[in-house]
Picture: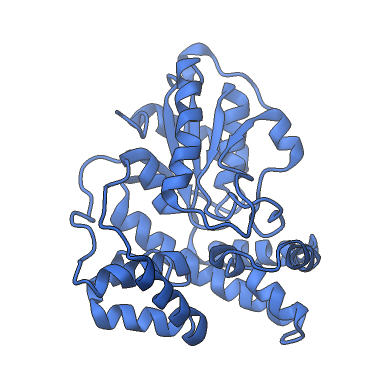
Length: 321
């Protein structure tokens, strides 16, 4: 971690809630940490996998050393065998964000789970309820037929849901969409956003993006993802659907079961990560107003953080309520 210098009073943005997004392996977590440490602020993780305790190697959580330097919200809040919704996420972190602001401390929302970012910065719109029996039906369909079949069925019911579900491999979101679609309920209106940017995002060109994703996947396995997955399966025989299908953990489980080699698991993880990154880019483009910081391979995280800080100053807080 580079040495951090406290900014002059006139160079720091006013305390508020700012947001830094980016696809997987874009370096947003490191940049957010640098800025929070420098400004004395809090980081709110917007990562739907980082909420799970004991799932560390595959989620790029802040290290214990980082957590000693900066306070983190939205990390390690629920056991991996428990379901966890975006509403629960907001209910968990929003009070702490409010407390920080009351104390004059800024907050940086940082993550790649676009729905989490959107829910925090814009609020959760009320929606129709999901009949438990239909949730159970589609959950059984998912388990027996697989993610691909569930996604195809959703698009058969209403193709408009294609752009409304950011991750077709996320069982909770797809099942929720299926329950609504079979009732003839269309995706929420007003998905396309207009106006000035409210968030800052990091991005690389395609070649560097591919390299970073491959490097991150390999590091996950080198740092013990398979052994962590083995421990998880022992401690939690029935992981939640979201945790069970998490990128990296699903592939590591296949490796443990003898259905693929570790090299195959790494390659599958890279492939799924690339697919996920593509969905993230689509989500950010359609759902959020982002001011993009274009990064280059030789640029340091410290240099990128300076550019992000200037964007925070220019566009102001992401939460204006």
